[in-house]
Length: 170
Image (cartoon, rainbow, N blue to C red; front, side, top):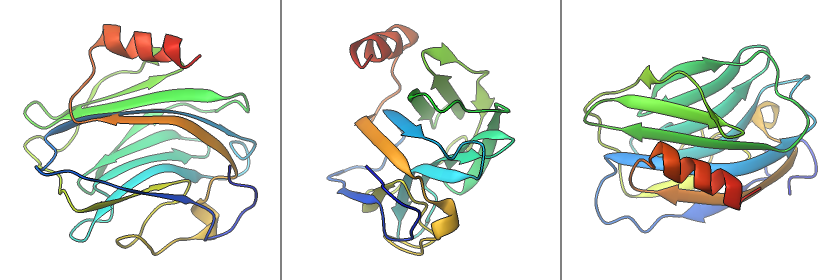
């Protein structure tokens, strides 16, 4: 739970990766009342070489920004309701295909950073965007609300697996 707008309200997770990421899926629930008032970070995975190795960000009036290895694509969604929202984001290096599922529904697949390999020594931050490894926070990018049921895999879940995850976490 992130109770107020501040640069130091976030959750920090440590990774234990032994090999670089060539694919991933991140699924989680979040709830906020900020969707109509400003943009906010949901999930940020940074390495010392790249502060935006993985970024899931809500951009007010535009939609979800999904970033991999410093590059970003926009999944347009003019409004995010105040109800709890379930998202799954996945990416695979060989094809460069990035996918975003919102409340169990897939958005159009996009091309993003084909051939990139993501670093292992990473800092994962929930509710804030890292502009530097494990830091560089901006209160104007924070999420005020809740994030839960966070799961991350080092492969892309199939459509069927994603649907099951949504059902299990409902």
